[in-house]
Image 1 (cartoon, helix red, strand yellow):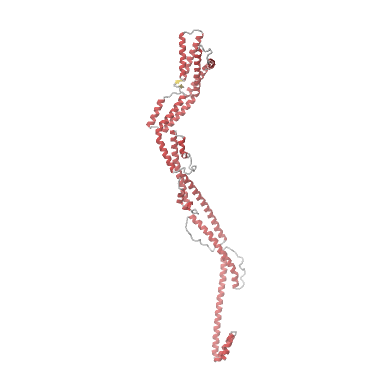
Image 2: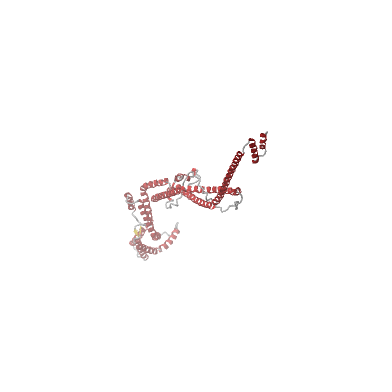
Length: 508
């Protein structure tokens, strides 16, 4: 029963006092001595002290850990503000009062917001630095996937971010300028390839595959190497264009010379209008696609060779044609030339080959020009010669008319002859003045030119002098006839004089 009673306190509220009382009862029942009891109590006391000591040590450690956490939080807060470039932040408690946990609880929201702001800022830095790296790689010509750029977490200030944005804008501007240069180069290459008849896509693909739009590449290379190679390609194509134009212009000049030499028809010349149209063009003026293809140059070379071979066979025909033109000019100007000797000389020059055909034709052209100039200088005199000879014809007709004893009969056409006779008398009366004027102009012409003015090989002044003498003799005969002193022999003389005048008229 006593043991049962001793266990009853265990079922109630357990305290140190109740446990000690229960321990005393047990010792009493057992019969422990006081010394043993004291030892056991000291042992219990020591065990209690050890428990308290462990608890205190744990509490000290926990407090130190909290203090370190608080210090780290304050350092982190300072570092975040420094990294973000913020001097202060709304929400950070100014006073450090309260318990450690209260202080930590006060700092925690600000830290959380700053960490979030840091993450967002780092993302912005990563984005802008990635774009900068990408453009720099494009400029340097580096291809392939690159690692993301490292972000300096110690400096995430807006100032630094603005610096990166400014650098990015400069690079974007440079990229835009480079792309514009690339497109200009590509456009120039396209135009040059079109003029030269080259494959544009093949040409730009050799520079860089991204320049070929048909390849489906979205972004074009803007690297220094691509720009340099494009520039070299443009210079090479321009030099090629220059050389081809010079070659084609040389061939076109030969073509025109041969055409002019052989008097080629306009229809035949029109077949090479696309060649001769650039005969005096500058390099920049030639922009028509296909104007300087190798095929056109080869066709022109073949045509020049063909005409050059044809030239020899047609030279005689052309030279005689020009000789005929020269003879016609002299014939109209009543200048006598030895046509047989001239044609024989032309044949001799062509057959001997001592004179270039072009030089021969140029010489003949010069002679034609001089002949036209001489004919023009003779025109005034020749017009007066025509008038003089026409007047002499009328004078001859009037003489015959006056000898006709039936001229006044009322025959058919008599009135017309009468009118003609009246006009003839007026014209005949003008002959002396006309002859005097003709003599004066002829002498002046001979003085200016230093040669004799010949009419169909006969000196004109000699013809005029003979005419004046014959006319004078005829006038003297008329005077003698009026006074009745004419004799049969004088009639014969008169007929002889007038016959001489008619012979002069035959020259016409």
